Length: 337
Ligand SMILES: NC(=O)c1ccc[n+]([C@@H]2O[C@H](COP(=O)([O-])OP(=O)(O)OC[C@H]3O[C@@H](n4cnc5c(N)ncnc54)[C@H](OP(=O)(O)O)[C@@H]3O)[C@@H](O)[C@H]2O)c1
Image 1 (tube, rainbow, N blue to C red):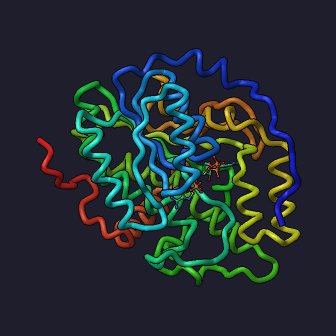
Image 2 (cartoon, rainbow, N blue to C red):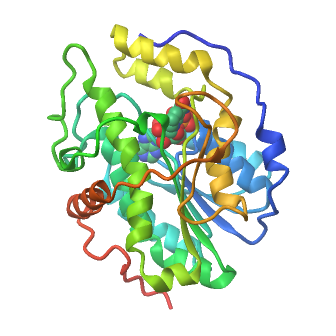
């Protein structure tokens, strides 16, 4: 059962934030999940500001249609197939991004996500939410590190931006959610909170990844100008909620959570402003976290308080390395000169 149908809210902040941003001519930006929602707005916005936009989507008619919409809008768009439920697909995508962005990547925006899915394993054996939302983005970031270095060297700055959520709030990160234990992480039985705990852990992982990456990044990469930022969109009427419903959101609890979000949600354009600001605002600084203030309210993207947790960051880093098989995060060999 899908949640109630709430009409799309009007955009309140999008135009005024975007008009403060500089032109992005000559920059190459990559974003995951641009078939709809915040990723589509992000790709369109970056393209209109002059960037070349690499869109990483799993192959589908939705992905083709979204790429066509961007092209029709005059965006210089390069589609790259990337199914975040498959490490093999992500490895292929990383190679392609390195080939496309041979002159340097200026922003990698790890945006794509799924929410509230049943307790299922991917073919790699991971939880479907954790692999899609975090583990594959961890792997992708490592794979494109050489072109982020190159972008920073060429133009003085490159950014990795991750998309977290208000849902990150909750228990501290547990390693088991990052391990190959898909299908055995809380189940789908009564009262049905398991899927929401798995989502909470994956969105917490998005924020902790930024802090862990920043902490471990070699000093020379910081000096090159590689920056790491995070955003959260606030409740956003994007269609994500309907997808959760279609995937089996039949319980009272699911409907209560989804309808509560949609009742207060802002527009997709306003929801995309956190990742847009974190990516393109020249005044934004490494380590910062942007999103609407408050607990689950909509609003413009503001600078949030840091939410450091070194013990959880260590769990995040070490378990993500083990699960993705990345042995040297910053040392991908590419043959690039
Ligand atoms: N909407 C909200 O209220 C809200 C609140 C907090 C955080 N967020 C976060 O915001 C981000 C964007 O969500 P949204 O609201 O814009 O939802 P959305 O409209 O459903 O967009 C999600 C995007 O992720 C892509 N995706 C899903 N699984 C994928 C996979 N295996 N491989 C590649 N791409 C995949 C989807 O592509 P397909 O068409 O192939 O499925 C789609 O393009 C997510 O990280 C979400 O957790 C959203």
